Image (cartoon, rainbow, N blue to C red):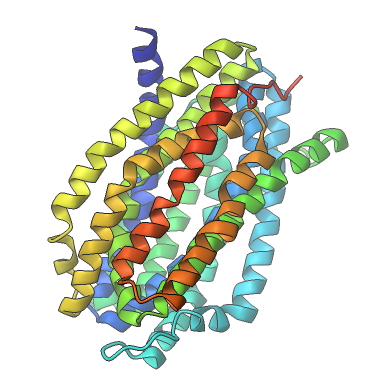
Length: 454
């Protein structure tokens, strides 16, 4: 009965996150499918820029996760002022991310896109792809601010156990995105026909609507979310608390940033085998990212629940719950594997592209799906380690592993072997079994169990 209770709590917290994050990814999927009807170059350009924006999004997520560890434990402890400090720290972190991200995209955006356009291709024009990519990026830069503000509020609400507001805002935003994608990409009902620029404008409008709903609604219900009362009377944070959060949060920030950068680097490795591969992976990622929100949300829920339990000083319960939730998350992902494999041959047909690109997409979907249970288990394991403040361990465990093991392996396999791309892709994915083994041992030893707030 106790296990059923923790599963229920995890689902109650995770399901709204799944819906909200799924809707957020649905925005990308809608862009992807609609732009895919314009041709392979448009689809590939949007995908490449989306991969780069994803690095920024993960940097924000990582930057907010450090204070978020303290937020979950402060809430479990009942320390409202401490929770306010974590919110204010998130504001500063997001501001820094926006400034740095904007500078990088403005000064090096074209060079970053060009990294993916070196592969040979008979059916994809790299010059057209670059042109569309630059158009898309120029508008997408304006989404950085509303996205970051939404994450500050949404993450704080979740740490208090309230994840419905972000979910509702996400539902409304995806409706806005779908409607304006249709109107602006294809020029319907008297609207200008803007192509990839229309997709970017629609995404910007969706992000702005989502942000306004979350922020305004949260403040209108400040009687429930009492930490928001007087939250902007000062943005100052006690020096000792700020230093502690920064010291603990920096490894998470660099981990998420380097991990996202690692995923971009992996795609760049595969792109040397041909631009058709990038297009195929674009289609695969569109549907796989939509479903991987399940294990990502469950992982976040694990981190929050275990963090609250640690904050309350219930260490043995935290360890027991951690194991239960890891196996539960892995089991749920088996269902996702079945779903993805069953639609792998159908989904790529929604795109106006070549049969070769569709073939690549189908097999990338299948291989990714087969590793979903591993990813689910790994996510729960990762967030468990992080809930106890072991951010350096998770940094080594995640992004350092990617850059020291995964990316070099992909480079060697792509450049020094004649293996087919699907074999290379499967081998690279299988390297995660090393992390599963090491992480499981760390969880079993209980090295992560600690209370980091006083």
